[in-house]
Amino acid sequence: MTTEAPVRVEDKLYQNRYLVDVGNAHIKVKPHTKPSPQLLALLKVCPAHCYELNSNGQVEVTPDGCVECGTCRVLAEGGGDIEWSYPRGGYGVLFKFG
Ligand code: SF4
Figure (cartoon, rainbow, N blue to C red):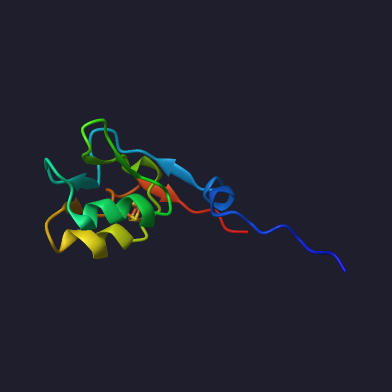
């Protein structure tokens, strides 16, 4: 009996391709001095690791590798911590299956 190695999420994400809409980020973090619990949660829940803390302890987003799963939208848009919209037509993630 053979056992296959588990597939890592990072390896699957590497298969995707992205067309970045330079200057038109589709997710924005509201300016803040101290991040809310929802913003801090985004550091852990985003499967593409688009959120990170800067040197001032504020949460920043770099949505270039976003897979448009909507997790951060559900968690943080309602409270006003982020603005979220789909990328303009033709931009964003191109999924590769298989
Ligand atoms: S939509 Fe999903 S992949 Fe994109 S930034 Fe939010 S949590 Fe990350």
